[in-house]
Length: 88
Image (cartoon, rainbow, N blue to C red):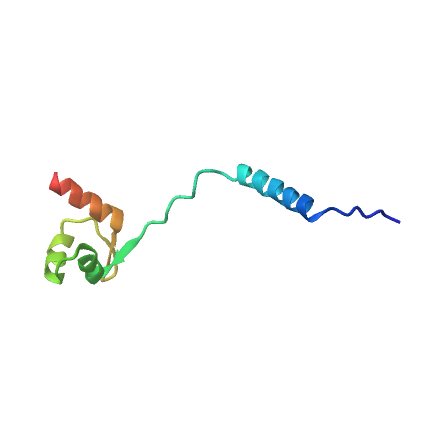
């Protein structure tokens, strides 16, 4: 027959705190890279930049664009980088 050791509520709380502290220390501090977000089409580009659709169409000719058939995609980071580069 096995002996059962009884512990108090406070001892149990302390044991749980120790385990949680140890697991927090073992977690990697760096986070996974954020996934790239895309703007799907001219309507989303216009809404993102706060401009009209015609202006977005003209601007799309100067921005890095990805196409799948007739659909256009823009990476948000590349759009912002291109606009900041043009501004300077």
